[in-house]
Amino acid sequence: MIITPENLRTKILSFYPEIEKNNIELSIHFDDEKKAWVAQLSKHQHELMTYIEKKEAQDCIDGIECVYLGTQIGQFIFNYCSEGSECNVP
Image (cartoon, rainbow, N blue to C red; front, side, top):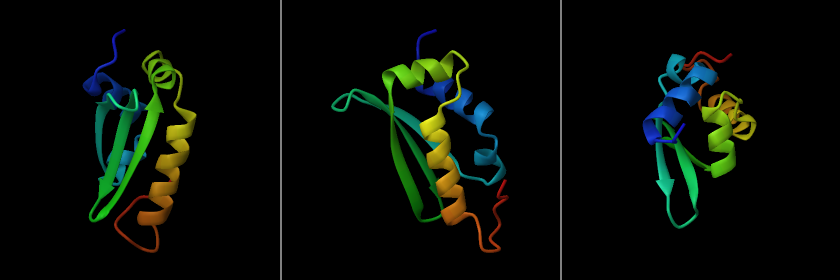
């Protein structure tokens, strides 16, 4: 399957439902200069941008969980969705 921002975002959200549970915004775009996909997470004033290499993005589309991205998401939730905030920490 060809990777598009929409289908990569949908697949990431299916792997990591805590993104939506915690009302974290997720946007995806391709960075031509870095030749990699960019996942941008944001909640209030906090933001994280992480790069997803083409192979990892294709693996994700093919149903293989994005381990590196999962680590980044977990750290974002830990940093910005804890301490009694309105986030649902898994």
